[in-house]
Image (cartoon, rainbow, N blue to C red; front, side, top):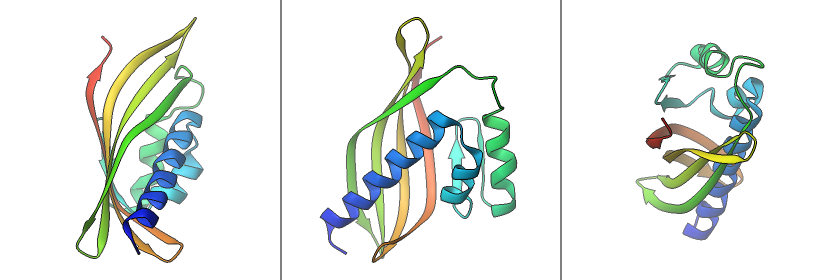
Amino acid sequence: MNAAEARHHAANLLHAYAEIADAQDVDAAVALLGDAEVELPSGGFDQPEDARPFFERIWPRRTTRPHRHDVTNLFVEPEGADWRACAHYVRWMIEDQPVVHTLGRYDVLLTIDGDALTVRRLTVAREWTRA
């Protein structure tokens, strides 16, 4: 796996996660990250059986306002046999007009074997949140 291919896979993964978060799709989140170690500002999990309850807790149905994540500044580097990807994100809340709500960072550790991608760890950090 070369760096360009790893960057392509990492970009697809982070954009897929952003779409899942925007849709608050618990099933898709569990399918993508259920076997990973996940750490968000609101908690996380490191056991597959804890993935669904975690995502159900952070994305309660119909109780959060619509939002959109934009992913930028992707950086990918080898880390042993794996790849580490870091990117910035902006979370927009959709109110009367879109409003920047959160600025943060994704840090992901991936194993890539051909077209097979395994997410080892996802850490989401918030650097700024609108009061």
